[in-house]
Image (cartoon, rainbow, N blue to C red):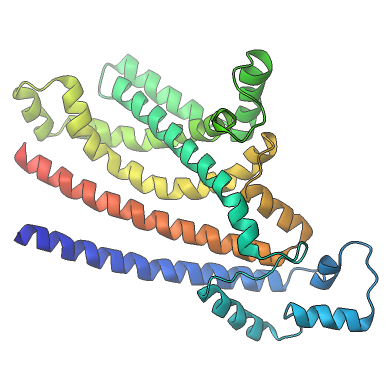
Length: 320
């Protein structure tokens, strides 16, 4: 009971620290983006009015007042923070729709692609490690070579290659589509290069775990090689990989911009790209807020998983 209480207290302290640092990251992201957008050339009123629109001075003044552009930058910044605290990300300059509606309308597609790509990366990386790590030099060399090659593959080039091979030639998967079949190729294009990075990070920890005294003790008790790898060594090897997953989600969200263009998928990346091209600042700000929030949440989740896996690994080592 005392051990469980100590674990709960340590976990609560760790969570509180992550929440505080997460709020700081969110505030810094919003502040820096707001400051950067203040020096971007261009008049937002022209974006709001649309291309070729001729406005009278009174119409320009009315639009500035409607969108709060007549206020000093400090007041607009504080007003944005206040709205953000209530879940209000403002209105799009171009479509004049709520930014939250536009972002959440595309978020589901991007989340599905990110989770699918991360799943592909972990499956490929773990299969490569379980089959080749801590075996003969030949198998180890093949596994490392595969990881180096896949991590160096440009995701957009791989996406084009997958479309050519599996859509145009073999006709196994559609080149364009929003269903499950349309998700496979873009998930592979993003997940395979990431698998190379995860494999390289996780392999060394796995091989170190296989050489530890507890692994030798498990083998001496008659455990099979598969049981040793799955239940003991892999638990230790997951720690650096889980930590890397925090970075991976951010990388996948950024890389999805090119992949969404190649596979003609609507998603958050395409929305951000269009907002940058059209200087739709509220969408840019809202997207930064969302990405920073996702980063903070993923950081908290991965940190919690690392904490739990590390405690279970220590307990398993003690029993071995």
